[in-house]
Length: 465
Ligand SMILES: *Cc1c(COP(=O)(O)O)cnc(C)c1O
Image: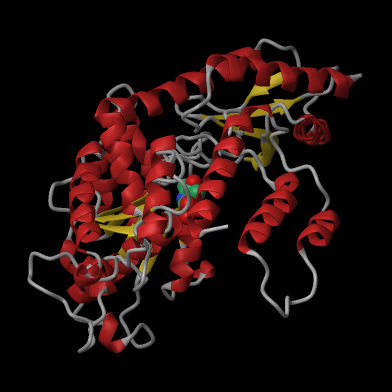
């Protein structure tokens, strides 16, 4: 088989998978053991025919694939991949451009500048903000908080990139009680331990309370980072930015917003009030691979102030040709040096959908989340635990006599996952066990919601016997 035939046959396999994905069992069905047996074996001593390798791999992985790109996967906050983004990724893999330096990939560098401007405009953030194209929100949090760490220490007369953190003035880091572990993990990598974080009380939806932030800030002096959140991973609720950001700025803090999916509320007029005041922050982290529905891995680190962003990330060496000032150096804005051209998929998405299409994607999935909540809440014994203001739904399943039951909720989740019509995970929300439903996929329809709600209700009825 020629290289051409090999690649065409792989494309055909991919298209066949996507054509059938909404008829598959949504969760992966095999055991860990059977996957290991099908895929493992000793280190191959000799090479094999590439066509055979691809065919055998495709066959062996198939039972272990989770249909996250299908329309009824509601786990975590996942999103699928709009076909035009998959096509762009295929070309990007074939072109195999390295986004580290302009001279290595001029087209990618120019696309990153263009898409950076579009993303900032879509989100209503300040023009001139710098954007790094990172693997996801986790690395975006890391990048933005590194910029913030640089800036608050610079103002205190300290160069953290040169002199490190060990003898630096103490930086106080403030987070909400509902902070996402990604922010905590990013802070850890930046030298801030979990026990050092000042935690601020939240309300029943997980939003940071302004009175509690004001009290926390009053007890702090010196350099300070305040980490806010747009889109709680369970409820979808966002911190009240317009009340919190001025409090933090009055105290001289750098304000960072973790908005992996919730930041996209800012792009939709009917949702933007949930994150009003957001644009006044200093940095924002968000994902493209969740709600924007581009393939993994893709996120944006956005910083209102390019100088600290670049100071925290850029590396210099005599052989790394930097080019003219107007030529973008991709590695100035991200933690990596060599890097694939993940901007291509985002460019293709924005061109294919336009701002209107992106707003519709966000708005429609929120409407579908409300439809799901409405289908479920009419059943006696089911309770929706959150205000379904965005795309997240939390459901608790009670015993037939009406008493709340963590075991009942866990039992229904296990039955839904085994049933395979749809997939939803679980979480504990402020002491209550809940099923988490995240509607984040471009392909989900009203019918998918109705079928999934019916399957969930069927599992509940079976569980109560
Ligand atoms: C998903 C998520 C992250 C981490 O993003 P990755 O895409 O996994 O890198 C961070 N914060 C929030 C609120 C999230 O939902």
